[in-house]
Length: 475
Image (tube, rainbow, N blue to C red; front, top):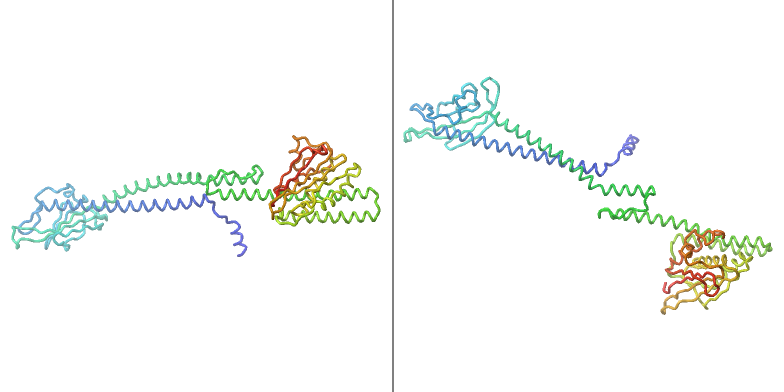
């Protein structure tokens, strides 16, 4: 039993919005047309009955003007009947006159069995309209009639003794009214049906037109999922803009997270390259066990710090605004000896021109990444000399100073038209030189986090490339 219910819920799917709207509108339209048809039918039937009553009343009034009575109160009609059917037996239009003690009928009442009115005397000026009442037609078949009655008083010779009341009844076969109703109902329901079909068609077209923006959103989202589009377009109705904006924000967030993860892995691999290279150089140099163990301990500690830093940077996705000052000189002295060992075959030496007490305000790992990549790039391209300079940027009292950090080399330099290309992630200045092409990209990411600026130009002192980092004060 439980399995059957679970299977039902798995198989059952909510109706689409279009199906829901079409079903609801169709039910409402059918209900409206049904009520409209019922109201029109009731109104027409009431009007037809009122017209029939008025017509029968006119017959009765006309007869009252042409009726006379003999001394024994026998019915005598002086004028022609208002309708020839009163003289045709079983014609469907009948006259009954009721007097005290007896009654009289028109010629048309001969044959059919009409309702007994001998005991139905109406008060003077009293009127009634009844029906349909059952009768038996002249051919013996059952039928129905509508009956109008009017109570009158015969004046006689003008004395009270000769006055007596009488009642005129005019009856008409119900088939005439029934035929009118059938014709009217056929016409009404036919045209209501045609109108309903037209409205349903228009309703379907309007519904499809109104849901077209939603279908476009679904198509765009499908294309985004297939990789055919980068994001949702912005040309959507106001009601759908929060949805499309949220989807675009989610897409961009996911792509940024993916890019950040890829960059973090690439940055980590790039950061670990230098300690590994130092260890390889130390092994190839044939250094003693003591020196090798000491260098191994230093570089392992550095690699551990790099891994911890990259993990923390990936988790925080940014830098701390309020950090303790990190001395530039101490960090440089930790980085430069390892690079001098790696590039010992070239005999490259690094010189410092550091303003006394110059500091970096941020994460120590950020400074190591920033200086490490700039210095490694300079060592890679330098012939003999690398110059590291750092100075503070004055600021208002009570605020943190800015920083200008520059690394120069005496290498070939970078042509102005190639600067933008070299700064792209994964692009190397010379494919013949080993590297991953992401060091300078890491530098740019860090500088962007600190709202700084990176300038690449010709070194005025050494003649090679100069990478100058400016971090504004007050951060």
